[in-house]
Amino acid sequence: MKKTTALLSALLLCLFCLPSSALSRDFGSVRINEIMASNGDTIQDSLGATPDWIELKNVSDDDIDLSGLCLSDGKKNLEKFVFPEGIVLPKGGFLVIFCSEEESVKTLDGGAVEIHTAFKLSADGEKAVLSYQGAILDIVRFDMQTKDVSWALKDDGTWTFSNVPTPGAENQF
Image (cartoon, rainbow, N blue to C red):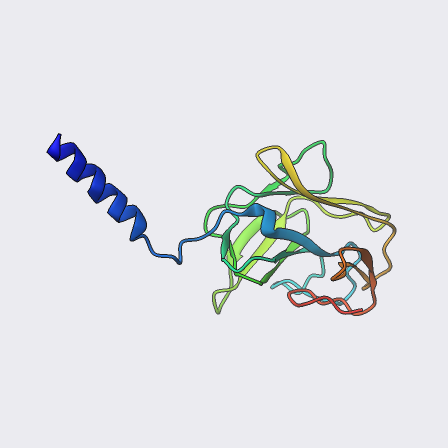
């Protein structure tokens, strides 16, 4: 009995001593923040192409491990893109995901990660869907887009077009 109590006490002590810098899995703090379905020259990928893009924002005070989170352009197939292990969205940070039909995740010089999905967005309008294990976490519908004008989330929670797209930064209007 003493051995079991000692073992249990040691286990609890280890749990309380885990570093507080452990990554969060609070997917409720990840938001779709900006969308561009007609990218002319707003942002280029590492090969110089200008694919569509979706920007995510972490609204929490913790880094979030995106492993297993899904991104899609509709509700029929929520798992069109599944974030692999090792993708972390820093606290208060942004992540641009290129929608190019060329799925890949690669680390660039300097350590930045470039993500491409296997689907594109329609400039005629559609949706962007963020989900986890079949549960929709965020869904954004957008109408026809004009080249280099983004669909962006405002501080009050409403969406509007922005003539000043800001991939990887706070939205401007």
